[in-house]
Image (cartoon, rainbow, N blue to C red; front, top):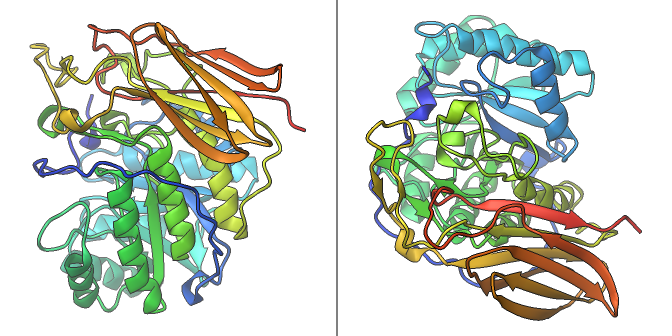
Length: 455
């Protein structure tokens, strides 16, 4: 299949790993900044090259994706285009259909482009072609354009071309620092900021890292860009595991990393949020629902079996509402979300599923993973959770609110029983068992959920 983003986004070698620290929930105020005078918005990074329902997706398929996102509080898609018209015409064709789908639904779902390695002329055409569409995301009356990577000279040329065409733009790119790193520290933040004084703001594409690292980079970038009265678009990523030359992974302790990233950006006062990603199947950062949790066959097996990440998306709704309103929502329904790999970290996986050689090995960072089942609970009142992992069992007394518990996993079925007093609120067995020897899940996380009726 011809798709630019089936190859890794970055050729960076794995150089280190920070174990995610224990994260207790903290309440933040969430005040608006000068750059965030418009409503806070949450977007999802959408890979135009690999739609959820296949390369032949029709209008109704895109409408279904938009509805799936909007039902969970997502306000729009950032349409990542690694080409436009020069080599592969389908990028503009599919983008046209996505805009049409959003318009047909009439639900004010917003769209903007994330230019990725295209020419300045192609990036400018994205804005000039769709900037006046009713579903185009606009800030201060101007269409928004973002990027994945790029250079200062490239971005400057894009803006010049748009303005030469009599249009305008709010340009909020993501640039790597000159000393290339995926998790920028203060010196990197300062360098990019100082080199780009004309930018309207900045986006952090934080994917390949731990939750602690992503939250830290979000914080540094927010302080710099918001402090200058500009836009900052933060990122939240569920999980990351690449393939091929990018065969590496990062521990996220189930939903705990995402929780920390959300809490951090709420405290930081980020102007917007971009969830990274909706549908990057090749790097396992996807959030999009594509079927029931037991379903694993997808895109003709190009990336091997894929595991549901829908629980990451559904658990995020609490934080999406918190971010938008500035206050933690009242929990009105007991819910649990479970996360686990389907094999121990010592069992080799397939380095590149579409390679006929089927070479096996351990991804970079595998030694830092935890053979643990993680559960995140949203409780209306204190309750008792029993986790049955294979032949092991442990019971936890859990307070009301958002809580995280964990247990070293054992091969076999994974069962979760939530009680309040003698009443069984939830009794759920995970859709996939954990194997002690078969790495068919290939270092991906599986997620699932269970809920009680709303009170």
